[in-house]
Image (tube, rainbow, N blue to C red; front, side):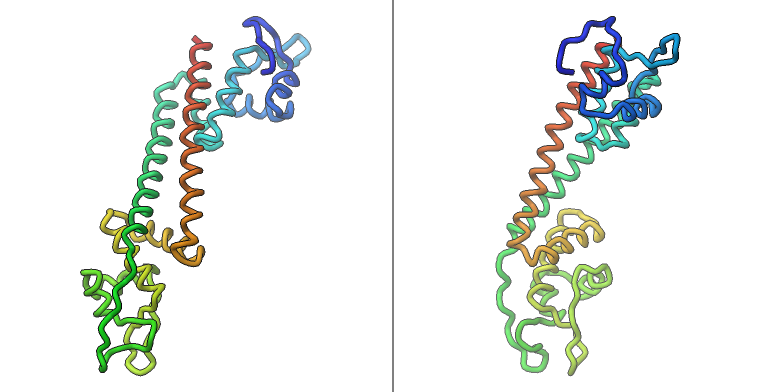
Length: 245
């Protein structure tokens, strides 16, 4: 709110709404959803709120950017049902997810740093594909994996080799080699194929590793913003819990 509120002060829905840039209908919806404690009623049936409701609203609005609307709602409902431990569990889950996201980002950044330019393959007259590609055997040896692993990655959508029209062999172009090496790094980090497929899809949509750097910076910034939002949300929720007594 824009001013200090006294503990016994009565607030109209419009007072609560204006103080947070909301509509009065939004305030009523929040009360009905259990985000705010139930309001008192005047003899004529009008809702009246208090500074405690204002504190609950501040807590909820601070929790939303940190945990999302659904989880923030569940946290406030748990508080109002006397289930503080459930509220804390939900917060812990969000922190765990943020940590997992940070670890994924770190793994991707590490994998990209490790992707030094591929050494050129030695031409093999009987099995060398046309320029710009390599067969499954040389690529598997280069990565230190089995050809069966590359075939598994192909089925999972991590690489998309073409077929040589003369031999029918799989041919991996430069982008496929890049994606295979990235997949190899992430698999060594313990990531699942579906997680790796999502990262590789970002690499492809970005047009390669270099343009992906901007995406990674944005990803890092979003995680930092969310981390700070969690601090702000925790502070407002703690203030509300103290005010509730």
